[in-house]
Length: 364
Image (cartoon, rainbow, N blue to C red):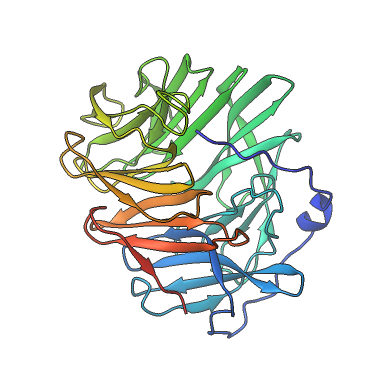
C-alpha cells in the first residue's frame, strides 16, 4: 500500500472560502487535457476530472459522458489545484448530481452536478493527514482519514449526513500504531476495514450506514485488506502483504471471498506479485482485477475464475500510479494511468469484458 505524503499547503483558508460559479456551456475538451481521476455511476455514465496547461500552471476541467466515453460534455470544475507533491486528486460521484473531490487534505462537494462546489470540513483533523477515500451512501457521507508523524499514526472513519458541511469522527472506528491504513466500500452494503502495523485488523459491515456490525476481518494477520462492493450477494477482498515482499517492487497477494455481507472470509488463491498494490476492484464474485506499479511499469492482474488463474496486462511505462480502478457494472471497468504533470502524462483505460482486455479512451 502506498500513501503519498501531502505538503502543508498555505492556501487552506483561501481554498475553503471558494464557491464555484455555475457551470458554463463549454463543450470542447481543453487543449492538452490530461485525466487525473475518474468516477462512474453506471457502465455508460462517467466523469473525468483532468488538468490542462494554462500559463505556468495547470487548470482543472470536469467532463461527463452518458455513452461510455464516445462523447463528452463540459461541467463546472472544482477549484482544486494540481498538487506539486504528486498527491492524487480523487473524484467520486455518488449519483449524477452528487460528487466529491479531494487532494488528500482538502475536500469539496457538489450536489448540483458541478454547477457549484463547496468545502467539506473535517472536525478535529490536524495536518499532516491524508484523506484516502470519501463516498456517500444511504444518505450519509463516509471518509477514511489517516494522520501521521514522528513514527506514530492514526486512521479513523469520519461521517456526516448527506450535504453536511462538516464530517466528524465516528466513535469506536479508529486504529493507532506506527503504520495505519483503512479502506471502505459501498454497493450492496457498507464495509469498513481499519488496520495497524500489519497486525491489528478491524472490520465492520452495515446495510443502512447507521447500524454497524463488527465481523471477522477479511485478511489474515500480516496483510492489508482492499475491499470490493458486494457482487451477486458475495463479498470479495484482496489481501496484500507489506510492499517489497517477496522482493523489491512486488507484493504478495491473495483473493478471499465471503458468501454474504458480514460472512466469514475464506480462500487464499495467490495473485501475481509483480508491482506494489495500487487498487482493487471486482466485476463479479469470480472476476476481479488488481492494479499495481513496479519498476516504472503499470500492471493490471485479472482473474475470471475466482483467483485460480490470472492474466496480466502491462499498460505503460509511465511508472507513477494506477488510480480509481472500478467496475461500475456489466463487466465495464475503468482505471487512470499516470498523472497529468508527469513526463509521460496520463490516460484513461476502459474494459468491457471484466478486465480481460483494456483500451485507452481518447478524450477529445
